[in-house]
Image (cartoon, rainbow, N blue to C red; front, side, top):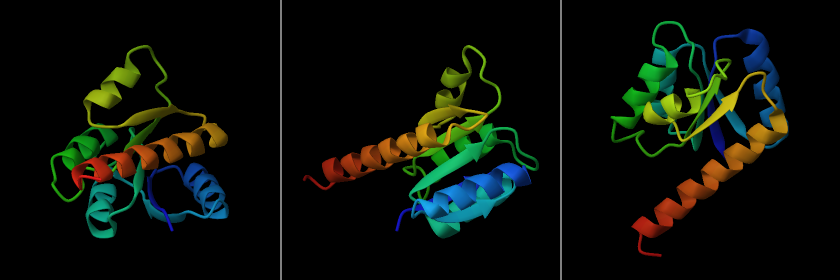
Amino acid sequence: MTKILLVEDHEELWDFLSRRLKRRGFEVVLAHDGQDGVDKARAEQPDVILLDMNLPVMDGWTAARTLRGDGTTARIPIIALTAHAMSGDRGKVLEAGCDDYHPKPVDFSKLVAQIDAALLGRDEAAEEESGG
């Protein structure tokens, strides 16, 4: 079962997303601030991380850079979730270490497509490394 770490501090959003993702067959691990997200990513080794960028304790930008700098989490695909859908924001989240970007409000079907693409990319990278 695909494990998703959802790092989100707004209860309505994590409740909505976690219920919808579970109905789609994903295992969902929740974290409510950036530091908790980093800790749970290290402990749980999820297949994909959905990371809000505006978080308490440690913001998503710092969390993404921290995860990319850690050998145990560096390869986990990260999809940034942000309400800041401004021009240039996609580049900023990619620069911070995220693999993709999803503006809020969340378009669930588009988000699931992005999760599937992130998983496919991760699997292809693993295949290349193993020489397959």
